[in-house]
Length: 108
Image (cartoon, rainbow, N blue to C red; front, side, top):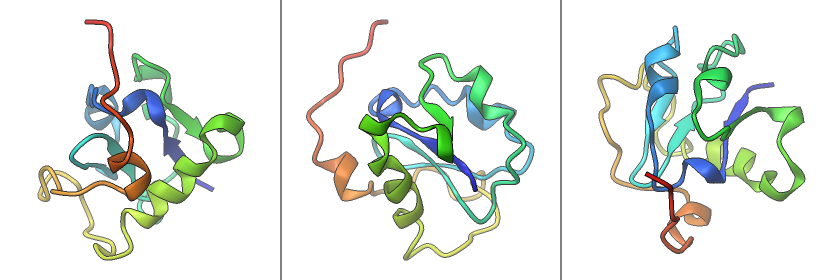
């Protein structure tokens, strides 16, 4: 099991979760953040600090966002397990599900 970042993060990337993560497993794509399923230790520190409630425990992900689990896992297929997001910086890609979304409005 792991945590999943879902649609409310798209085009927002607040990064409060990144600052809170003790194992540096939240990576930055072009349009949203992704949790590495093999590096996440399921501590849950990221979930309560997300200002848009985009982070869910895998089993608790709302039905409308279930595909985001696959998107989070598949994002790392060609990256493997880099062992820490900080050294990677922004990764110049997104999962196709996210890349295909229209721009997401966010209240400022």
